[in-house]
Image (cartoon, rainbow, N blue to C red):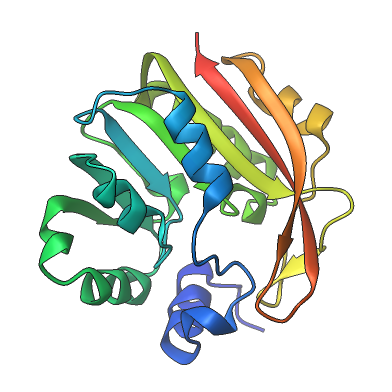
Length: 206
């Protein structure tokens, strides 16, 4: 049996399913938008969306006037779909095709957003690399906002295993490098009318 290829898996997902056929679809990512609004960032603040795929978060941030946006995803097809949807507005966004564990940023970010990418990292070495990358990529006093499946959420997504977290275990991953500012649980209703329970947590770079 060939080893699992994470990139090939996601390229296939985005090649074969519309955004309304995937469980993470949100017509308006309200939880993420509310967090970013609470930060009261300048409109030229650098914001990166990790695992953004063809999420609509970037659409709403552009509409709100943010001018320095980056979307990272392992799937080139996902990013192509987002660009096509945005049309000329896509030129206002920096697009990065990369596995987050291999990402080498060339700038510092004021806000790092990740909804449902981090929990796909099931190996400790990948989790460690993620934290290290976030730490060096976020400005001093910058923010990290992360959402993952809770212990009451699914154990798999898109056919592959994820790592579930409680508020405490998620905080423990980042607490040596970041100061926690908030954490909470919330339900996400999928396009298939099922419920997924998420843990969200916000952190400030020390």
